[in-house]
Length: 170
Image (cartoon, rainbow, N blue to C red):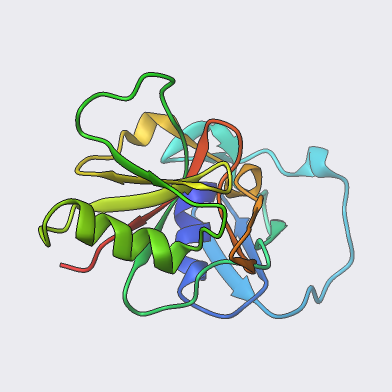
């Protein structure tokens, strides 16, 4: 269990909140039902990432989902990732002042001659990235990839040197 793995699980729902509790439990919900406690009572480390806190004994840390995640059955959200300044040849890019997640998805298919790369994402609102691998060590909290897509402000399109990344269907 990590905060990110819980968030990814809850991305499959339309619930605006997710939470981690007791070190190993993940919850998704539409409302926060209980009163707020002091964070110092939450001290259980996440087994999947001991640098993160996954709640406490009978206590949950609650997070709000970004409002504009893509809700589609075609792709699976992988998360928010740092992008190298000088990407290697695994990356194929396009750029548009009217970028959306859907447009990036289509651009990646077109750019690689109908051979779908494993992952695609948008960096800093306008740059589409198509790639075949994702380095999980470059993963950061999704809240940092919250720039709105210029072509659809209901979608998020990364941030400076950060890309919101999706996996193509198998």
